[in-house]
Amino acid sequence: MMLMLQMTMTIETASIQDLDKLCEIEEKCFSEEAFSKKQIAYLLTDYHSISLIAKENGTTLGFIIGTMYVSRKPSTGI
Image (cartoon, rainbow, N blue to C red):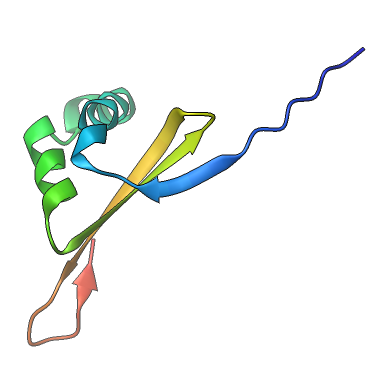
């Protein structure tokens, strides 16, 4: 008999309270090229950034942070 469990992934706004977990994921994925804890903290609190975190049953699966730069030219993002 096979037991099937349904799990629901949620996308939430990441916050500074998620910093340690985001740093852990960043280091596992990028090792030498990883953003530092200070850089991630800055991005999480920057007005021009949007930070999202994916969770499933309370477990963090991943995250994304995007930043918009506004100048006289059209807006760009990274």
